[in-house]
Image: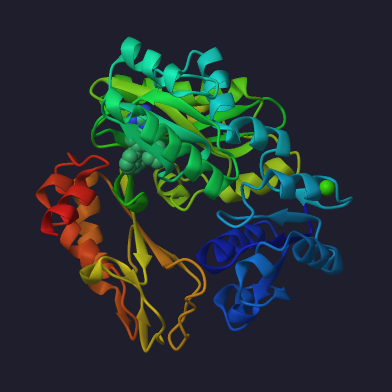
Length: 450
Ligand SMILES: Nc1ncc2cc(-c3cccc4ccccc34)c(N3CC[C@@H](N)C3)nc2n1
Ligand SMILES: [Ca+2]
């Protein structure tokens, strides 16, 4: 097992990873930017290295500075968390090539193979995982799109190869839009991902977004840890995630979980990952693979009792998973509420600053708060707006909702604006409480009010 691990991240996920390290008796090393010199993850770590000024490009994204810090600290592994360099295959490769420092995550090859959308579709298709009807190679010209439309009908999703999170996807609702939307998708792909190749999929109207957590070791053991329903999103930002899905029937639940496991097994994947699906009607289709630990991994931890981050470290150190697929059981229901420093009454505009005059998070049975905050901290607004996660578990969805209402009522934050009031309202929204919301629910609810 590693003796010292550098966590190449900040905020709540950095503390979360350091807690797994502490549980394993591992020394923790933090990296921080000038803006984070008083941050919670720096306080928590055994030692900390300044890697640059506030700008992420010169600090948390500075690969050389991070590797140098690891070497200086004598770290024998680097955990990337999520965001920043977590899915950067080049950085993974650089760490793999650095003697004495292990990358805690999938191999750079696996990241390249599954991170490339059409490649991932080919691998899943080969493992009999249903993929959205479409192309598994990039399309070159408008003629190909028209032929696809003739065969599969409209609407068509034109997706940038390097796309993700809503960027680089254009919808062609009828043939007359083909040229314009194809060009737009290629331009956006080039602009955001430096890659203008695009592929096609039949567009599924109003889908639910279901994702399956997987963990695999270097000895060929591949386990799924059940699914999460991430359909409550606003402009491609997840707001509340939950598990198990309130809308899947038991047979689809079992099918989707096993499909994810099978697909990852076919890809020779090692470490933690998430397989994303779209569910429309009684069909589910593979969407993409996330080759990192995700914000909402906590929902799965609450349901299964499996410490996913601890297993990331143990798998990276060559250990074997000590549980069989049949040992994995999801108990009860869990929800994660992202606590963003945003003003829901002002189109979720991120806070521009402030000090935590009062910071008094909830507690009690079934309540977990992952954060890197304490009362009196100044809010750092140089990076993303998520400052904490409230994770609530109950014996069923009803108890989970009631307990979440109690926890959100207890959550006392003053001095900065957060979306806690928005979450309190969501728990009284009848569509959400009935579990009937899909990925378009919030966008439609908000756009209607506009
Ligand atoms: N063929 C087909 N049909 C419908 C789709 C609908 C979406 C989509 C659109 C809008 C919000 C979403 C939220 C979660 C998951 C997917 C979506 C979608 N996304 C949006 C971001 C990217 N990760 C994939 N792809 C789709 N693909
Ligand atoms: Ca190495």
